[in-house]
Length: 458
Image 1 (cartoon, one colour):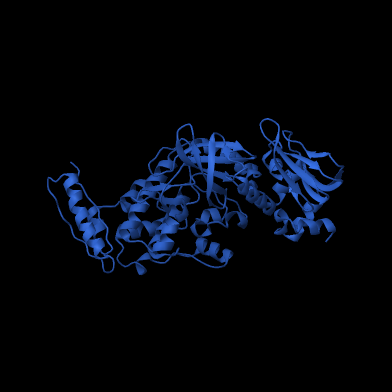
Image 2 (cartoon, one colour):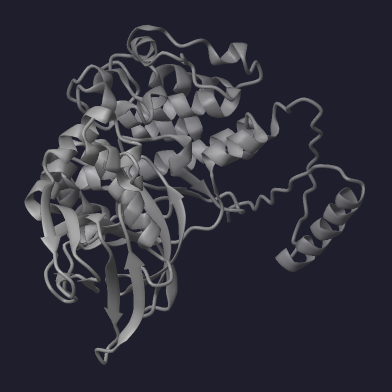
């Protein structure tokens, strides 16, 4: 290991990288020197270099709108500068002035982008750096017209921020694609095409996507801000769901998928149906998220590490796939909701993928003997390996999944007790008063309960 590689191993951006990756990156750096008073970078100029200080001192001078210096920061050996501007392809925001003779290593913009494309781990580190600078005081606080307020989540593909839209006076969520994806030309081409279609989707069970924005050398997706929890969180906290709960959620997801599969020339396929992409508010209303922005299918195992437990056999085998892949994933999710675990699991990825392709799933009735025949039939037929034999008629699927009063009231789970009170010619206000009194009595006695008001259609 040469001296410069040792320096890289101490810098946050590089120290967690594989030694071979660091060695390859070190070959792309060049050396330069600056005399006292010389500027390494100049505010407002196009970013074209990323610097690492090897020996010397540099002062960052950030000017205000009047041109006066409002902030000064001194940098010493092993400090970095210019990396965010180079990453985002935005002008430098500060002057960097040598306080003495200073020797630096630098990476040019062409070499920098080549390394981002070549090494996913390096791109991941740059994504992390970028998100640390976003929604922070003195950091990057604007995307398009939206003001970032805080980071609220992270997935395999994107970081999620809460933001405010001053024009429409509403809060939104903004997803920032990670930088390794921005260098995947095939993915970006498909993303740009589908983003336009996804933004036009208008369904009560699909999250509203308002627009996509290209800034800071990546893509941002602006969508409605949801309140509630995703299904993955609910399952972790609550465990397996009741038949009634499962059916209500599955039916709403099925409605969303039927609508999406009918849009566009070939339909919009979700490709990543799983509990963490099912959002549920306090009233039980379902929103399907992350439409059309799942990672593209590929024959490389690294491309499917995220959710192999929900992948259909045809995607695993690298074959052509269509909307029936979403139905298979919906069946896996149904099994998981009722049992707490997917039908196939293994600590070994290759073995898990093999099970998905070859093994017949267990009978759900062994785990939930009280399951009704319709829901059992959907799970069995949705998990058929050959998509040509798999259930694919959405009308039939919705018949099998549709909640109904008589179906949902029986059978009961465990120590549940259900009773029906019919109120004839009663107003909603009077009915609510009765229910609230009963609810309070149950709460005072510490009895877990739920209410469902059914109104006969006229």
